[in-house]
Image (cartoon, rainbow, N blue to C red; front, side, top):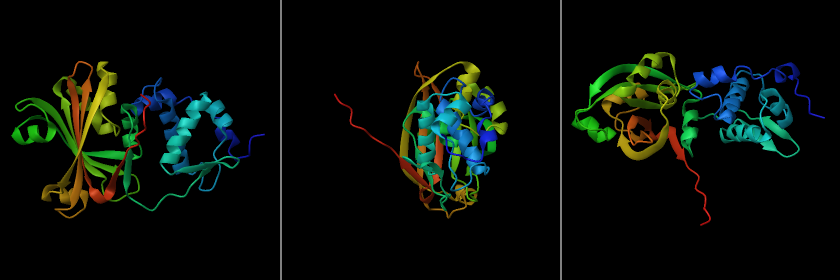
Length: 269
């Protein structure tokens, strides 16, 4: 017999909003279903549907509610555990944990798919959207060709409930896909799924570089931190199967607010 959660009526609600919510967050309905489920449960935890100390529905109940496989449920719960929202123990079920008193952002990405979850729980406050010509300084920072024209979108990414911004974000989008700029004022997720959806092109490779930097006087006020503070600058170059660069993203994080986590496994040869 499944344990009582006190939320029977909510648990039985079907997952009818999945496709619409998926497109709104840049996730296609047929892909990354565990991320959709995890996001829904996160929102319900944040909204008090499952208060701290309460037990989430059983795997069987979640399978029934969302019409998904047990494997997908387990992947969604794994994501919640990685975000320190719940703990699971055999025989005790999955328990909602109290939030950690920290504004440190931990980014744990293992694949292009996982980058979709980067913006979960954050909002992007745009300061400027304009076409720019890549000059020598920008060519050095972005790796793009000098003299080319790209759509530049700049602003600060904020985490819900945290006063200081997480980072300064700069998007440089291939002018072939510049039409996505019209959608960004009402959109907070990553840009590359929009490019895929609108133009039917697939991002197949993301190159990432992480370097040390100092917060410039121009960024200090926006990031609410002293100029000269240590920072990490993360540049991601998004490429398509033909090698064309669709987008370059540069995130500048104050070092005290960011930690990058990566898991490496031995592959049998």
